Image (cartoon, rainbow, N blue to C red):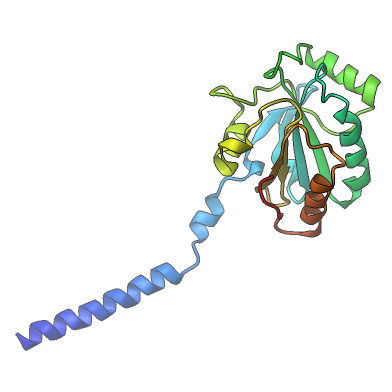
Length: 202
């Protein structure tokens, strides 16, 4: 009986040590397979592949846009924001969508021309994309999972901030102007960090 107790005691100690080693070891497998924005790809407004991995190391402000919306004048602010912070690593990515009020009915060519003529847009843009509901682009489905249902687009010119390492770190409603203090502060904070973006849901 004493031998059995001693055996069980030794086994228990061994089990505790092994368990501690397993739980204290860095979970590199999970870290290496975590999904980020850089795992997704769009079609560009010119019809080419547009992998978000090309923006790795940059801060990206993703905005679902429309040409015939009351918020369409925000294109001016988005272009200015891009010009002001591009050299520091900011990318603005326009994602035209006809999901809200059917206010983006044109073709990709028409949308691109509209943006060029009216706002002299130079930041990258995608082809027209579904951003809400069951048919939403996988990137937008991922954003909903990452940031929650309240962060999902409810209208045109909803904004997401993606950190340099591809994490969804902030979101802004359509009413938040590109030059608003809240958005500018979040962009500046994300640009300061060379590895990980910062910010909380807004």
